[in-house]
Length: 139
Picture 1 (cartoon, one colour):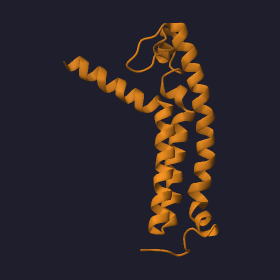
Picture 2 (cartoon, one colour):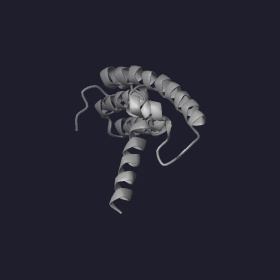
Picture 3 (tube, helix red, strand yellow):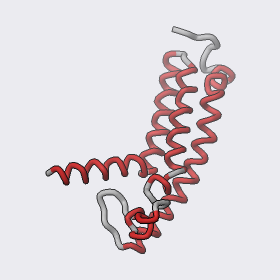
């Protein structure tokens, strides 16, 4: 039982660190939720703070190759770094899929970091500039 719990925990942690589609949805969902909240409560600074979450998710996506262990010689040479959490695939298929996922995650991740940095720095000013929130609005 102890071994199963350790296996489940390590695979769940690996999934949370390397599943780039989760990071994509979480980042976009946080940004959308904070935009709706900022517009409803007239607090543009809430939207600006969502940029930090976008940057964090972009960082996870950009460093997916490192997080899944492809830079570790043992994991790379044995093919363990290419396997998805909770699944076992043929080594060549797993390697191809891992490379494709790394490339997709890297593209999305760099975009998230760029857009997240802009939102983090100027998101509140953007909402004020397009007149959807008022300047100096504090509760």
